[in-house]
Amino acid sequence: MTGLVLDLLLAVTLVALAWRVLYAPDLFEAVVVFITLGLLMAVAWARLAAPDIALAEAAIGAGLTGVLLLDTLRALPQQAEKSGAPQRRPPHRARALPAVVAAALLGGVLAAAVLALPQVPIGLAATVSAELPRSGVSHPVTAVLLNFRGYDTWMELGVLLIAAIGVLSLRGSTRLSAAPPGEADAVLSWLVRVLVPLVVLVAGYLLWLGKSAAGGAFQAGVVLGAAGVLLWLAGYRPVTGDRLWKFLLVLGFGSFFTVAVGTMAGGRLLLEFPPEQAGTLIMLIEAAAAVSIGATMAALFIGLHFPPARKLSPLDRRVAP
Amino acid sequence: MNALIQAAGIGFCVAGAVFFLAGTVGLLRFPDTLSRLHALTKADNLGLGLIVIGLALEGGSWPEAGKLIVIWLLALLAGASACYLIGRHVAGQSEGGGD
Amino acid sequence: MIAQDHIYGIAAVLLFCLGLHGVFTRPETLRKIIALNVIGAGVFLFFVSVAARNTEAFADPVPHAMVLTGIVVAVSSTAFALGLARRLAKLGEKPPRINEGTPK
View (tube, rainbow over the protein chains, first blue to last red):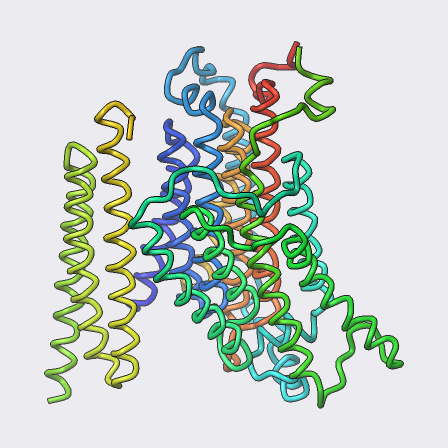
């Protein structure tokens, strides 16, 4: 009973925070409340018996996305001004009504669907627990991610790679290993020098833990990405060469690709791990993926900082007056 | 004896929650950034410490208590540094932006 | 009888609808991107609340894996969208606002 009261409070708070995120007039407040929403979502995941997702959400949803949004907020000054000073009349009430009615109708239909879900759960937990001993690990989520649905994880690493390529191509320069701008504060440098070894240790622990408990490549990778962002903010370069950066970005997708080619060359189906070597293969892929995810997250953050334009790119020359 | 330890654990957690509440009220009600930082860091560090003691009493084993204390120390470290950085930024702004 | 999955399921529906309304009606580009993330949060909450209904020793791990994948894809697309928004701002174009019709 007390659990349900906590769940109800949490759900109401989540919806209230989402309302505040979307309808607060100040964009800075919206971003800060979004970070808080991410943290409370992590608590909701913990309540719903999803510790893997709680770890990932705390690091990605609250951490990295919040940092990216704050950084972009700083770089888009006209947006922040516009939201503070209403220069034009707010739209008439009647014009805003159809959108609200449509959203409310959709909400009603979806809520009815949610309440009408069959009471007997139809899921794949039984199938997974039957096949778990043959998968090479003993944690079901890791088994699903890396073995049973390994193809999805492979393509997800591909999506990460595409996003990094997109951000870098928008930037106009792929030199990620340039010296970070800004002054290096003494306290921040000291903090980073103390924290980053601890962060690497925690990432390695999370990676190792993924075999038997909540953890794994994504959580470890995002923690490493946070370390990379911290290093860059304190004035250090996370990775010391451009070619090493590009290698790390491709490492995750590439390691899956190598294993896939290996399984097919060995006469098996795509990504069909032999049961006695599945554990080793999974650990190798996870280690490569963790390092690659860390480098990609740091690259996404660093890549959003455009270097000062020394010469115009062809796009600028076409559009600028 | 066990019930006493459990009750002490719950008592420490409640005390920590009261400190967090005080810090949040300070965040919402104090007039400027520096006083808000003061309220936040003092109340949250002590609040987290009390909650850690309460959870350590409830958890029972020494390795778990050790891990909780390490978490508290790291949160202290990060909180103090963040407070300093924000305060430095605010002080730099109020002096006209120059460093 | 209200169960845990109903509570979080309704909350997920509300998050989804709030986010959808926000994407179409809020003018600032950054807020549209945030609204897309709120939509994602609603969808993930629904997935996991359905997965938690399972009465086995552990919750259904396949939706958990899908949500983990979804979180990482969401942050990738958010980063790319933010890059696009910054590029648009740098080129000096205003992001189109829903209430202004076609830009001249």
